[in-house]
Image (cartoon, rainbow, N blue to C red; front, top):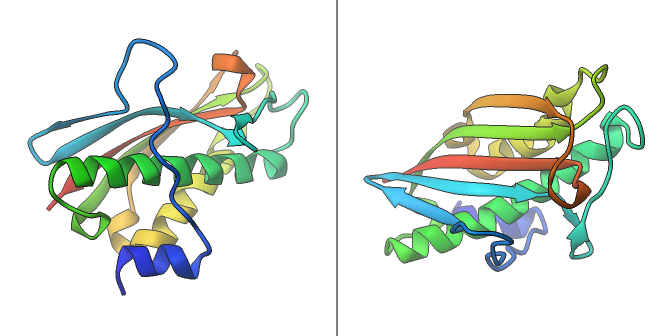
Length: 155
């Protein structure tokens, strides 16, 4: 089954690439690696605002991380297209780095990030298994609860 069939089966429509909010580009390819810039969580087109341990729970933030994964997949699809490829040409999701807007005492950043990692596994199967880091940070742009970046290898 193609990646696009899996996305359709999951009811996921890939969004267009977001316009950068500062001086950077959405992705850069070097060799077979594609580096996606950090994407913040969005809900209804607006930043998904919240701070874990203060205004938001792990269970509330996990869907935000999943939403970021969907946005990342939209950008990855655009990066593939720019390289003359499709999502079916993704050889490996190499690395995910997650920043979770959280209080100093909050310690479940890894569980929030599972919202992204689990979706990547559903979509790509074993190719979606990746190395990962999840950090707690004092604040993110526009008050977003989660920001995630991704590195993928194209075949």
